[in-house]
Image (cartoon, rainbow, N blue to C red; front, side, top):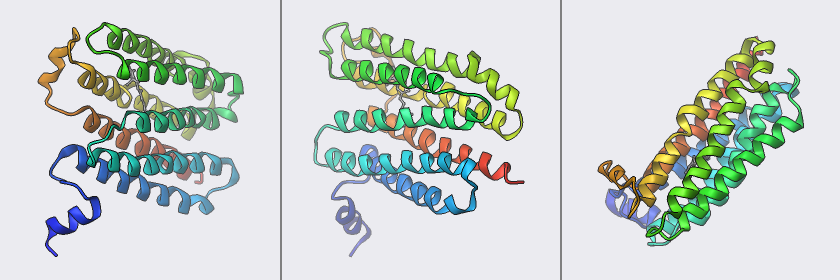
Length: 243
Ligand SMILES: *C/C=C(C)/C=C/C=C(C)/C=C/C1=C(C)CCCC1(C)C
């Protein structure tokens, strides 16, 4: 069996295509990361265990969705719905991570609810934008609404009460909060880029297609950075607070 044969056997797809390849790699990376987080659970005390468990759930949910998205993409199908179901489950769980880390410092379920609502608004409006008629202004308008919700989330964690609670906690908690905030500010900014690439047709931002990347590739890169990276930050904070 040649390598090409083997690859088409496991993926049933041309892996020289960046969309297929990043879906394949994404499935593997998310699965491996989930195993890593789940298997590391016993080494932590109960204060951190839920946070690590949530890290593992985020990558595990993604792994399952990537398995199906890879299949859809390689058979010429659509990935949009699977993608957004994934995000609607995993992004609120990332909000839970912010809450869990700051819970001992005084974060309340009210903080959590606000974050979750804002993230749902961001994602639902984004979905409407992706399926909207590209010959109208709707993709731009839905994208704008989604962007406002995104900036609101960024504001809440960078300048809101959560930031103050993190500062008052200090140590590993403050450091983790700061790094997770950077993920939201920089890592999450990858997604609007993918959205613009995927909806550029007939829009004022069609110049973006000068970047010769498929929307799915950009989303896949964003997910790898944000889901695995985010989980590793939480893991590192848990390790640091053991000492
Ligand atoms: C694991 C998945 C994550 C962290 C997904 C995050 C998704 C976003 C931050 C999406 C944001 C969007 C905008 C800010 C505007 C355009 C529409 C979206 C939904 C792509």
